[in-house]
Amino acid sequence: MNGRRNINRDSEAVVLTRSRRRCCICFGLNRDVEVKTGQIAHLNGDRSNSSVDNLAFLCFVHHNQYDSRTSQSKNLTVREVKAYRTELYERVLPVIEEKMVRTKAPAIPIPESAKVSFDAHRQGELKKIAIEVIAEMHGVLRSVYHLAHRLAITTPTAERILFELAQDGSLRVDRPKGSMRKTYSMVNSLENRLIDTFLSQLSAVLISEERFILRKQHELDAVIRINHETVYAIDTIFIQNRLSREGVLRRIQRLEAAKRELGLSNATGVLLIGITKTTKAAEDDLRNLERPDMLIRYMEIG
Image 1 (cartoon, rainbow, N blue to C red):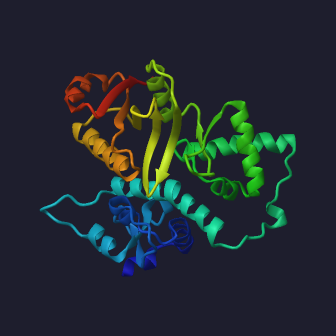
Image 2: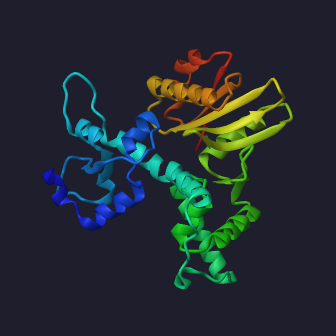
Image 3: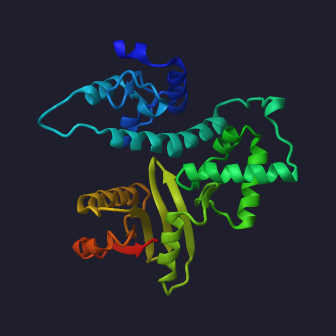
């Protein structure tokens, strides 16, 4: 396609490297993260705009589908594809890369110029940058290797920075059941605030708690066990403006699918919705979506 000639080579290299040649639409629609043969698409249709934000690697099938225009069905939107791309970049590929490093890839020597001495001044600087990186990833870090790469430091140094941040109370550390891999999340993130508020409303003592679980490309924000019979599978959502019934239904469907895939079919699903004063009025319209196995809780977030 002639459009490829208009792609800046530097931008092309960034997109190919970040995507690892995974099609973000294959992932977004089918949770398919296999390497694909494909092309780089201009998301807004303007082939003169080769900014990295306007580019995405798509397989041939989805590139043709995205570029086509139909009158009978709703096309994939720019916002939709960018959401799939963000999730692929920030949540899925770091996990894949970590697995490759642990199971297949040989150790890659780190150049001396990339190694950082852990003095007090540098420690403070790196901790500040680490928080900014985690904030960019929606407040959750699943791979220490990703942080080490972004900060150009060794993995042990990245682990020490995360330990210090946890000691400072900035980060929460969770270790998924049956795994040695830790998940780090910002204590004041929206998700943690909503979960903490929900837990404060429970009168029972918890047996166990896991947060930010990602397995088989399905994720839950938390799994709370009160006892062997009472288990909550939690997803969170924050809505600043319009609270759409259709949007809430989609999140409920995603939560139900995650429960099945993670072996939690008997758990009670809980959708925690963070709302503002402008969306609070929609609360009553969605109360009838609750069922014995699906709770919906609204919490106003300033």
